[in-house]
Length: 123
Length: 110
Image 1 (cartoon, rainbow over the protein chains, first blue to last red):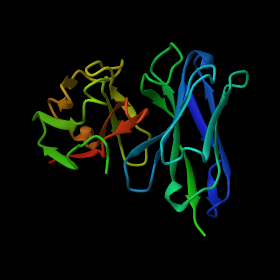
Image 2 (cartoon, each protein chain N blue to C red; image 1 turned 180 degrees about the vertical axis):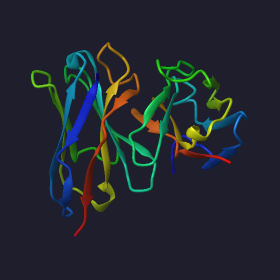
Image 3 (cartoon, one colour; image 1 turned 90 degrees about the vertical axis):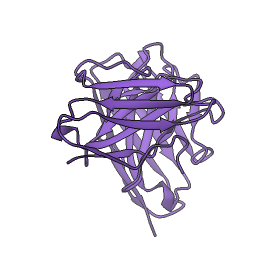
């Protein structure tokens, strides 16, 4: 069974940092690109970042570019999101998601999602 | 303001057919395949349709997707009370170099 389990969320002050983790199991991790998607309270879905199977290509939403960094450890089956210079508008439930395409890109869409980890940015 | 436009709400009675629209542009829907997600309150999204009209295994054939030009549509036939959820469309945007989502449509089964 494919499983994605996020962790690392919490409550932080504006300007501080957090690192989210996503532990994956049930599929060959290094065959697939991965994504982070967030959902602010009561709002819709927003794609945050994507990464190819070998970390060769990274993508970011304009809203997080320069502040967030996506990475992965294929040996440990983990996906990460380093979030710096956090703002109130980054408050959301953060999901990691597996890409549909087994060719390793992040252009295939998201087929399996974790349950999310909550990030709250407030003074 | 979402890149893809969806009606905020839709409704139907049990057994009815309802459709949810998703409007975009040449840089997104016009050039790339569309995905649809279903989300119940407090749960993660679930992939409902990929590649415009393909259902993953386990998704009932009551759900179907279509695309024409810069618009897409999700149709649900034989509406059931358990279909009451939020529905999101999504696709890649070549101009933004990012995945974009619609604002979501809250479906109510009357």
